[in-house]
Length: 99
Image (cartoon, rainbow, N blue to C red):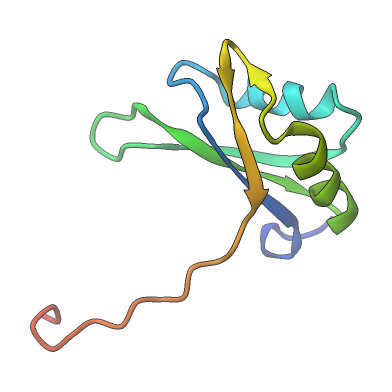
């Protein structure tokens, strides 16, 4: 089984605040894509959805198909945006931020 770091990922925004990870997964699976993992981002304190997440696939081809097929598609009454996920570079702390 692939580790999470080795999966091909897409970033999804415009997700409804009440959309579950399972609904998001089903939306991608119903398009014929083999979804490996879904994560919807939530606020740390309130646990409320931030309206965005990541969908991961075992191969880059499915990630590309997801962008082509589902960018701008409707999920639970909202148009979602699907684009390539890019890992963030770790931010360097300035001297003032280091404690």
